[in-house]
Length: 364
Image 1 (cartoon, rainbow, N blue to C red):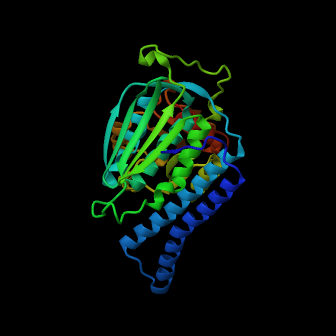
Image 2: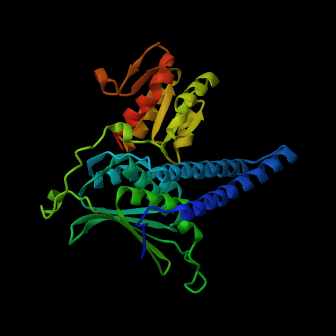
């Protein structure tokens, strides 16, 4: 078994992470540069090559974001808001949100989740579950299993993730342990679990990988009252729920509006993509949903309504934020029956980040 670090990693571990970040980010960037050089030389690139270029740049961006998250943990400035969380519902929500992506990767998902309530920081839990999914998708050959049960003596809720990391055409003799099992995603998973005070252990054996994440702060009334854990008195507000790593899609055609939105969200650690129309957004989302969609009011209409309803059918609490032209508008969803949050063009700089944080914090 490979346990998560028992103590805060030291300087030597930090140097190793810097080296890993450099090595991982150089591979997709080098490949992307080769494609760009070929494009410069020939003036041509086919659809497959363009898709590969986009994937390589996206991969480099994701690695950079993981590096930022690891740096945030290493700084020791992560504040946690301890809350009672329904663990099974949170995991179901994450898996539902990423169902399109899982299906597009050709991976079959199997779940067996018992109801469990734990005490944890909601945003860190959200990050941990998404990182676990990132890591397992990158390594699983066909099927990923998620179980949620309880370890006894003491009673701890436990998430178990299982998958086969060896290809079917590989024999046990010639199959080496894939290096990607110890990728930056795994390092982030380890560090997040350590920061949350969880017990994480991994076993790689016979081409199979099993990850167990144990939650010591399990609320006992969900398992027959055998044990109980109370929340900290100092539980803080949603300001501590950093949204770093969340993915936002912006539907806006005007360059000046895109620039305003980008500037307003610059310091939130988000992955932000821009498209110019609802049709482009639908194609973008066909293989995986972002965590929120920001849309300028000029894009609204029947096509957007159909796009929104399709997403809400899969993820009922999906976040939409509308940018309206009226000066000074700042309205949260649910206020006066509003189904989406609205932010006026004139207050994007002062209000958009707060609106997005509020909306996302309701579902994290």
